[in-house]
Length: 158
Image (cartoon, rainbow, N blue to C red; front, side, top):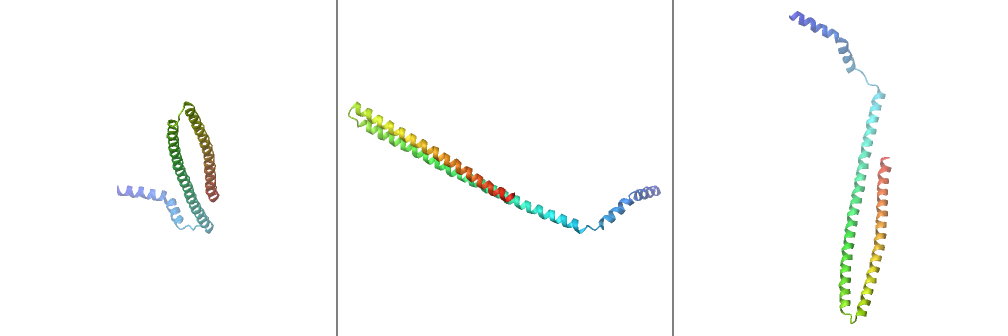
């Protein structure tokens, strides 16, 4: 059985001799200078692009942080303005009640009520106008900031 095993082993070795010889030659194969330079150049380009991508993603993150921080700040400002408006309305209401209580006639009470309603209407119109202007400015500033941030990001990565 040993002879048969050696015979099969020799047959397999002979069959794979060309492959073994090719691997031996492949190990000693010299890579041309142009191929090595090409690989180096492609690796350097990939490295630069990865760095640019990293820098771009950092800028996008910074832009998002700026936008979010600005939004939080503006939301706090809006909340304070609403609280102030509610307080002012309450003060005006109680001042109006005080004036109405001091009226000596029905005519005077109607006049005080009419003046109060007109004043409240003027305040509401003024607030609506101020809110519209504020929101318009906020939207325009937000759009400008977003445009500036994305321009910075895309100019660098492009």
